[in-house]
Length: 282
Figure 1 (cartoon, one colour):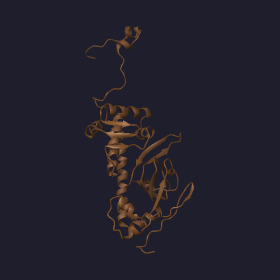
Figure 2: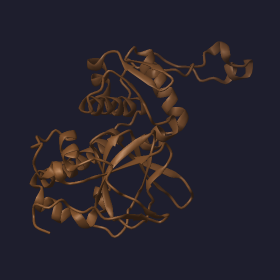
Figure 3: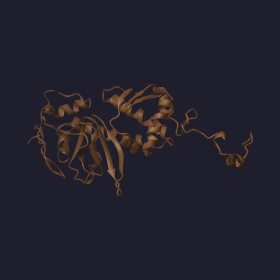
Figure 4: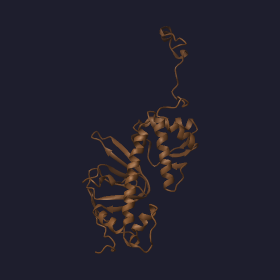
């Protein structure tokens, strides 16, 4: 095989047995165009077959600990990246959207360190690990795109660190929504009105808060007229104010307190007799 021949795609294997990966009409030109890379319609990329694999909602793309034999580029849909602790707790680490790479962190490992599953009907382009060096040689544009995708993956990790740096859960949620909005815009969708494919429990796992806290945080942002929420559909009403809210590491002073404070009238007679007096200087 010379350097201009199409790359033969190997069969991918998972712990559940071999999965056929015969090309279904996709080529590397489709992958490059999805990532915004100009492609010669008569060039090598257009003649190099590429596997497109469909993944149903709830289906795992890879299993934690499975042999790391491929990387994947999201063609359509949304994926959840997570790991399961020894006690069975599912820790969500990231969500992946169209054009983003999955499994990149496993290129230096023998097995996948995390599991990946689809949150909706999705599809991925499959790149066998053993073919990557050859593909980078034959298709320099693919090599550059792979480097860019790896850099974006690292940037997403830093974004999560920035989200977790906030103390208040409402601020964490605001930061997540802003970043998700930007990613939706990158996918060519509305950055101000979108459907969250992840559930509240998955979102709470990513943000490191309780499920009920996520619900209260949505209520707080809605009460401030920053967002409007209908089930999983979110509309950002004021991006500038949401951004100002997100820049605080703690709850801003004007954020509403949704927990009702007790007044002297709420106390029992015994509690009122023994209640300490408060001075103006206190």
